Image (tube, rainbow, N blue to C red):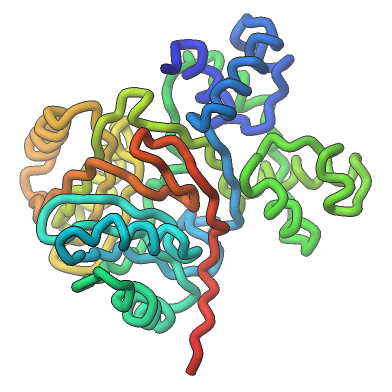
Length: 337
């Protein structure tokens, strides 16, 4: 089980994914060898993992892709087999078990609206054990997981780490950046020396390009962890009907809630979907009460409880929410016509 120092280290790497242990040691006032040992223990036990991917600068989803939340209903006793098939599919970013008339919901990204429609019909609906689907298209993503922070550091430590992080974004997306991002896709802390032979470039050029993509708004760097081992026992999805004049204020309020991991406008009877992490189900009552008091015109159209996440941002997870395997993220779908 992670302790306070582990949480500080994870939080620090969320802010500056490639901070050196010597730099972090000065911020935390801890010996760098201790930090290195702790990080190795966390990653080797599969409690912490990292990823990065190219994305849309504004929405925070992979570049040029359309995203949707897809409900999946399963035949009795077939949910496990359906999960095993769906987690292997590249366009399926996440797979969550949930409550209500659906058994699962998926976060999927493809290159066009038409390919999303076809993908759900031809690749999801036909999986043995799937009895039905329902698609909610995401329009604007206001909050997404790569920006979520543990909040284990004080304001001074956060400011110090942000100052250390490269802040000069590249003027354009050079072709050389793509293989670099792919090489860092499952370990954002790989050294330039480790990447030299793989990329066929000098250490100095690789180091320069790493700094460039670290500062780029169109690359997302994520540090994820086994949430159940760190105290979050469940998740929930709230489907809100928000009057459009109040949408910006509601989203601004949701940004202040540490529970919120994802928030986006959607199609359907609700126009805002909010994904929450919960330490217990009572937290959901508190959040709903706060919303009701602050925004009496907002209506909760539905609420889904999420007892298990089987896949998150390309990583399949076990029952303890440790990572098991990585499935490369890919929204480019080829259909046989």
